[in-house]
Amino acid sequence: MKVSDVMQKNVDFVYPDMPLLGVAKLIFGNKINGVPVCKDRKVIGFVAETDILAKFHPTMQEFTEDPFASSNFENMEEKAKEVLELTAKDIMSKKPITINEDDPLLRADSLMRLRDVGRLPVVDKKGNLVGIISMGDIFKSLVGEKLPFEEDEQFHDWLSQRYDIIIDQKERLSKEIPDLVKMFKDLNVKKVLDIGCGTGPHAIDLSQKGFEVLGMDRSSSMIDVAQGKIKSLSKEAQQRVKFMSKDYRDLDTLLGKKYDAAIFMGSALAHVENPHQVLQEVSKVLNDKAVIICQIVNYDKVINVNKRLYDVNIRKSSYPEEREQAFLRFYDEKEEGLLTQNLSVFVRSPKRWRFKGLRSMRVYPLTKENTTAFLEKIKFSNIKYYGGEKGFFYDYLFRKPFSQSKSDVLTVVARR
Picture 1 (cartoon, one colour):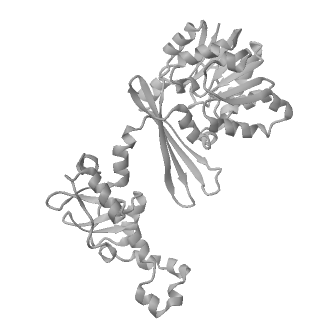
Picture 2 (cartoon, rainbow, N blue to C red):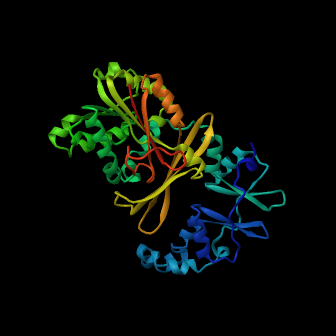
Picture 3 (cartoon, rainbow, N blue to C red):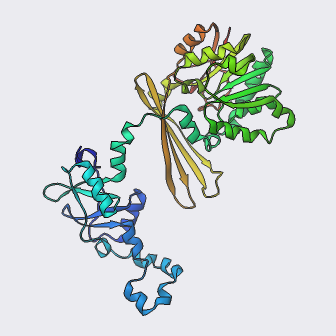
């Protein structure tokens, strides 16, 4: 593999006379550690973060003349205005290290390791700048592209500490719990199985309403968060709710009791590899008059109407070092029969936003039709459909008919 196969061709560069303030904005804004300096596309230098920071420290002559003043680190910080008035040519390294676009990829990696730099300008045979390559680019090419998508457990382990921030659980539960309670009372439901319970918001609320609830999730980190919430409940509610981190297999042997209802909230059923198999397992631990409730994202609307955008949320952060957190969720179209859900997280420090991370996982594209087919195979033939239209999981559950073009959420209610 050649450098040209992996390099970034849309490369930022600066001219020799560009003020350092502009150079610093480019480096900071693009989250890179340096930029090449060019004259007529010829690379004549390179400005790195370390070159800028070095200007805050005294020269050897300054230290010799006044070692006490030169060692005052607080005074060094006050040199920012003076430093930013310099130009790129004032601080650039004048013998920049470059790599040819036709060189082997691992030669670039070797050169960066040897010279202790994180990125290299890429030039053609005439020495013109044609791209830039970083160790991160090489890692993504050789390793990252070959990694499988994260399993449900891994994705939600990563998400567990921010799960209750992404969705306004208080607003969500204010609509969903009253509808669940009414239906459960009408159907004489006492024991509820919450599959894919996450951090346990529904299980905990239902336990406070008098129901016996077992919350299950394959993510141990999610269950750890849920267990922590139990401590704030009354003793009676604590006795009514339990959480378990297990795969959804051999549930009849594992649980050893029957339940009156099973709920899959927040598209939990779509986050398993084989929804039909999980429904079969759940069916084994439900009594003869049980009800199954499946809450499902209307993926068809997300892809075709919303142009793959799921939602964007900005929330106040619970972490003292962060002011806010922003979450961007979007989907890729189907490949190999599955959708890809992507979640990007950004955090706002006292002054600026920074990228925290992105994770992706495959989800089963549940629809009204295939969910119905799965339920009928386990002998749940009395099926009703409802829709929510106030964004994802912010509407009542059973008060509106489902519309393929308008509903954000499909709620399926099935009985034997």
